Image (cartoon, rainbow, N blue to C red):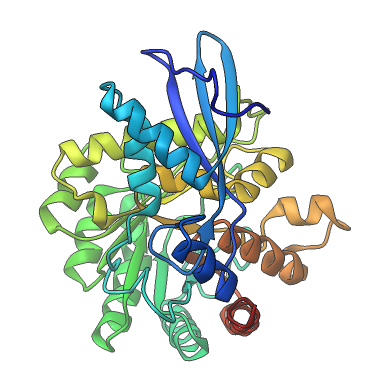
Length: 373
């Protein structure tokens, strides 16, 4: 890949920034102090190089640069009236404010765990295990004791091929669990694509909305979140659960998912939802092949160009089994840990997981080793 000499951006090109050479610890501090590296989202990682990509008229081209070269080139572009790269750099390096009260930057920062509470009979991994309010509440308490800082309560399976659940049934599953856990002081997220469920879950004490449709699945959901002024997770999904895995295809999965999330981000901001109240999730397994999933995880840092918190959900997903020995969902813990840590190494700040205690232990070692470096 060539450098920035001779690299030009067309007026209508889409532009993307891909931080490279991510590192932490004393080496990162030394590189940043010497001006050879830029801090990623205000966290402990820095990047020493980056690829700058352009896409337009059916062509994709990229240039590789060191951090200082990119800064100088960006400044020259801005002086000439083109602020696109400067904006991407600003988004990628800007320290993220807290998300739902959870810090995303600063000394000693560590990733946060969102524990999954499926109050469903048919979720792909644990359907039927916690499908009564009593069982789900007990499970939520256990996840918190194991280290979850958020409990994500959902009453509708969105596994591939899943059928929609009537709103009344989803409400009956979700609201009692949300109310009980919130009353005990838990930070509760409601996992739903229905505005009525969002509204009633928030009234019951939920403080985050997590929507697999990125607030596009219900015409009233944007207004519910904007009026409540709560943080929201916008996830990418191609199609809808019943059909999303029927031969999904992209021109470039990373850039296509980025563009789709950028558009939802624009719509949300226009509706009055602040960027700092938004986390984005590339939607691993939601309308993606194995190769698509791997590309998104390996190139997570690209999504910091949107300037939002990054959430990643890889726990027990089927691509792990497809790459291994076709293990059932509960046999995919090792792969879940590796995939999750891979995403964290690319800048993800929140992990949505089933196995909280095991992931918390892995994170402790991951953080310790990176600090020691």
